[in-house]
Length: 187
Image (cartoon, rainbow, N blue to C red; front, side, top):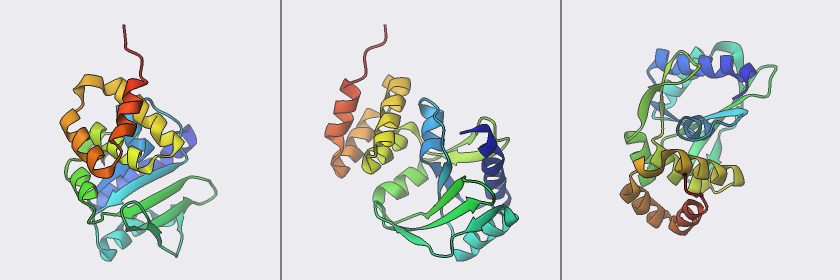
């Protein structure tokens, strides 16, 4: 994440703490912790909250972000998404509602609470395994690069049984195996 985006992410992290909205950071914010950090212009998070909880979160963010009034539909998990854009900037926050998708539920249950580097706040992030599974489902080029980086950094510490279960369920096991085989051994 670039230095000029840190205040926006700090504000979101502090608003999540202040409101107590159950959440998990997904996307590059989670993969950066488990793999190789890369720059990003957005923050993706999943929340477990009704409309009142989401409104509390929006209120806690104050006037720092503009809310797109039209919620959209996310196709992988079939959930609603709200988009916030930082005033005067290009930083975006995408807030997804926790869906009934079995993996969405499981990754939310398994989330880790960490002191995120540079944020001065506690946030919940995906486990390394759930970063891999999620990014294999999204399958964009940058997601597959993130999968490779997390695999390379985490290696044998990963729960391969869990990875194999979900990638078989989602039909992404062959892609996982292909990426894993492409990582040169460390000497």
